[in-house]
Image 1 (tube, rainbow, N blue to C red):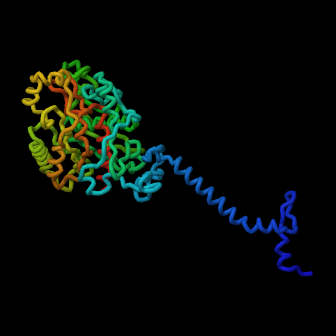
Image 2 (cartoon, rainbow, N blue to C red):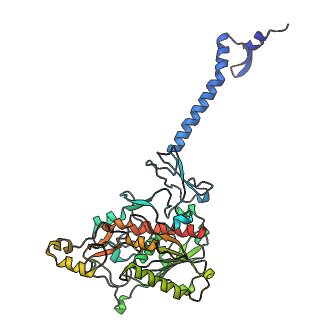
Image 3 (tube, helix red, strand yellow):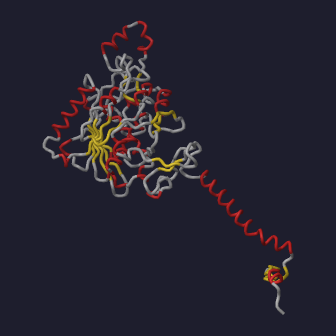
Length: 429
């Protein structure tokens, strides 16, 4: 006997005692069957949404403040903060759940202009070295070693936050960049003690990361046995000879990945550099004006490369000379004005323990960016550096305090971080 369509619909498999049975589906059962697919689809959708929210909250590269941070430093090129186009994906509350920022210095224009951003205080970030824990540190720049603990902590807490781009930390560059970027190259430094400070910062941070061993640091400290001394200018607790005093010759070997390495040297021997190498230059503060210093630097380069074809010369990166922060009208080291201030009774309070101006006009930046030679591939300057006078060594150093050099650790660490990434991006271009 044939069944009607209605009767056929009422006969469905039912699970009873673990076995499939056939029975009659009552009207309520048919109603459940009609809505069951929609219930399943809705449950799946809710589960996906919950999982998505959890993934975002627990993402290894998003902090609770919406900044991009890296928890995995060994992930290699597949690290979760990299897109296939080399961008850093970070959370931006003003642009939806996520936004994509290019890495800093990723374009030619960005490499020949100041890096925009702001300096912020971050007391949670501990310095990677301090109080002569690094074999390359100099005592005269260690405000911790001077006993100025609060001053040292304030200087070491300063971090640079770029605007509109991402600047990797030294932890991250081995993930972000190919390990071979600097392999077999020499990064040479041609400048004065300000540039040397940045080199020392770079060395000490790489040393902490295990990329430079103490045995691979070759620093010619003055030997105490020969009664050679490094000038300390009455800096408190300054070491005048032996390790942590001072040196005019520094050479280190840096591990940049498995079986690869590069070298950093100071001062640069221009005749030994090749087209694969990087030359970091700085005009310095030992001329009366920044214009004169730039002319002297240009003369050194012309003489050093006189017999070297242009296609055989190293890539040049210029670091803009730090702004001085002496308590003169312009912030410059003007001995006549400083002496007048020192002899002024109203200023005695300042010079019993000389401090530095908080901010000076960034004239060095203005002059140097307006006179870039055509062979300068990249320029290093972090905006706002001219407002970091309180992070200078200051104190009773010499007659007027040291308002040229930064405390170390301090802003030079952030400048060194930018230099490494600028170097990598310049090579990649």
